Image 1: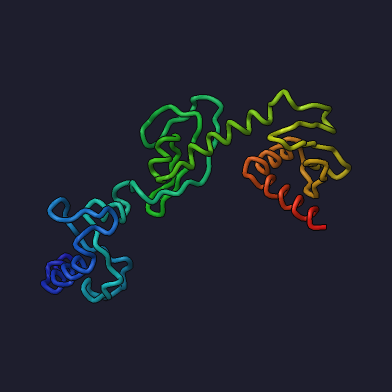
Image 2: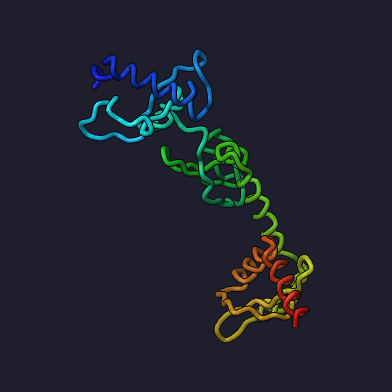
Length: 221
């Protein structure tokens, strides 16, 4: 295969692909002489020579991005946030920078194995603030669940949260949630499950939208 890549036909094909891509790496945007540009085949077909592909089947990458594409260097871009875990204390270690962490955020890449990293490293890898927002949400949820404002006994607990009157009530089939005197249909196994659902319902803004829809319907009657 090395001899094929030394063929003039490949050299001409490679330069044409680079020209069609504007002479830059399609991932990082850098050009010669700052980087060495190479041509990457998006897929390989058995028996086909490297220049016997459509130009659309190839793309220009710098040497570094090309190596990352083949999984030889850990990618800096294209990571997906898939979830988090609260260890309770600084019992974990970021797999990217080695810092001791409490909140582990899991990221995934199609060309690399899953990693558990800290908040800042997660935001950097994904190019988002998902980890920061998830960590803040966990904090808000924990405070909501343990709030001293909860009143009542285990079979009937109430709280006023962000303008909504909530109640978790025990029925023969399980726990149900009451929001502003409206009994929900969803059944929960535990009070904690019901409370977490209520928190997400309000924290996400869905409760506010639902309340506005009910108000509009009542006004139209």
